[in-house]
Image (cartoon, helix red, strand yellow):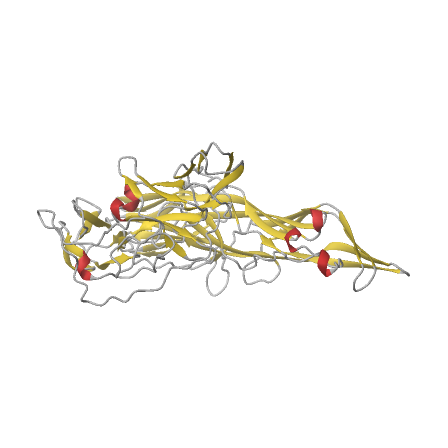
Length: 568
């Protein structure tokens, strides 16, 4: 494959350029290695044969085109959105399966991008990468860019996890800051600093982000009422003393490329207006000690000015006043009920003639835990988790804002519901002993496991962390002695034994694991699943001869349905 030289060069008015001066040493980081992305939506599956075909993700942002003759026969192909683990990666990554497939001709892989989502880089600086089985990310060939249709396209002879990301980008891409505040900006790179070529597939890994040589960058530009001092890969910005008429302001830096045109990396900086809500966070901890007494607390982050005093300011949810516990220029804390007509909804903050509103939304999510402990699944532990969340699906903490609550409990109405039919399984062994092992389980009907605080050991508990596009969840469930098991062994030659033993049901395999719950574009929590675990253990009282034990038959699965927001 022909190498395409893309050394970044000085842009002259006549569009001439020279190779950059690399005399200043740059510390090059190691390759990017990550765990596989967690699924963030349902897979789309289609059978494609020798005549070829195409498959597009449910959101329409990713597609694979398989030409005629690429497959020797009919093959089931799947595409599933997963969490993008690439540095500064845009949107979701996508998992193409099966990974073991072999193509007789290259297939086409195509991403669609939105202009507003890549403003911190340029379309010409976008790359596509794939992840190998060891978790390492590699550059695909230089993608073909179609700016009119906003697509990036490469060819491949294999399936994997795929994502697109910037070779160079400005950090931060978006900032919310106060009048007069100061901010440092920098340019980061993910490509090698010493080759001068777009990396070829299979031979150049994606790098951990680092600051490249200063000579790759031209002038920094800013036309607002504040000030900017920029050189090379860094700049220092001072915001104007009052919110400007054009808000957000733009700071840009020119990237020098060996091709005609000017390519800008842009950071959008929004100056806080006099009165504004940025983000809201709910603390579900229910504190009743140490002088605190509230069912739950709403933290509102933004710009509100000094506290004008009681009677001159208010916070309302669905037009009902709630108690203001703390009022500071950048943050307000309110005591709110855990349920009822003003536990969520439109939050309105008022002080004098100033007012700002934002939606505090609510979701009820069904999550399912299934642990198969016998071949065929007759003995399967099942728990339905009904989880309630409250939060802000639009926006996130801005630079300089500090979350008052790093994590919180599950909402108090969350619960686990155990519904399991009676089951039985018998297995014959000959190696260590000769006989039949039989385990029977009694049915469990609508057993509710109540939510407890995260500090308590039994019941259902969990911690919730606000993320830019959803929640990170950790859960644990322990229900002692709720499953009655009957264990019997019949010896081949003489006698039998019987034991009736109560057993526990708990979340195993995913205990304390981070479960990513992510918002879709319509503020729903998207359906998803944790990676399936195999070889997770057999029912207590069952035994197998070593050659007969098949780990793939014993699985533990955790998945969840889409949760629609209470308020559209």
